[in-house]
Length: 348
Image (cartoon, rainbow, N blue to C red; front, side, top):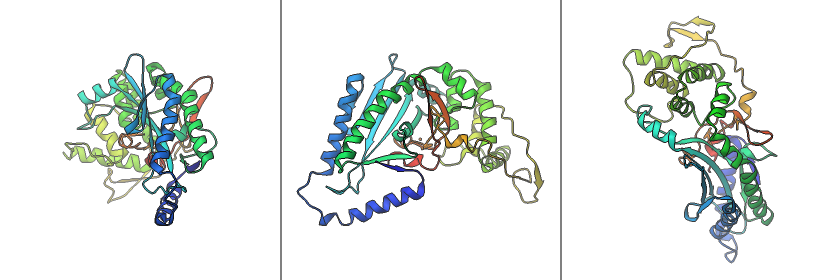
């Protein structure tokens, strides 16, 4: 198996696959087709997990299980690579994502402009596996990796992911960890909508205020610019993904009538600075170490992303941005590394 930790490794991974695929016409045509091997690996994993209640959707290469009250759904999906080469390289990657029916109903009724969401968290399966950092891919053309993929994914889902799924159904635990700044959902938007759904507006305000202090200074700068734009009547009518956390937080404050406390920072005045005509000094990233860990995950993830990792608005849409956090999944907490750079690759 191979860990992909950052965008440089991801880029190298893509080009090596392209180079191999360009020579596939020289390959032995009598070996088993990549699709057949990939399907068999997914089926073997599904066979292991259907014994504990998962349902397998073969055409989608996805398994899922619902909570007893049917309010939550855990999905694990598998994907491959269009540049597979029979007998040489057959990729398998996997992401998981947890959905909430209550979150879906609330966010549809109270959208952020036009944005609603049901995915609480999405990550690459590698965030739950010891021994490396980043997103995991297996080469099923190698018999040892084939066996390792089937064994490792099945074991991880049984021993870690199922327990994590139970944690996500515990609203008191979730709220407590968010309030302690130990955990967050896929994005600030998802975290805030979740808190508002449970009538914890004060915690949502505290969370966003602290978010502005622990992320790169551009987040705070963009937030202030957005506030000024809103005051000038430049309020968007629909949500656009990719506008940036600063702008999104300003929208959250505006739409949901929140009170965010902007951190005090030393500033030197700059005549051309649009953010109140002041140029902020860089805000120390007090959680730079913590952000390299993941929760459960103060994860992620990948997302963030993700994501996976928005393990879907981009694997539903495929994990968007990763965040960091920590959660208990049994006797020991699972620490999941934050993968802001790699979460977007969660379902490559």
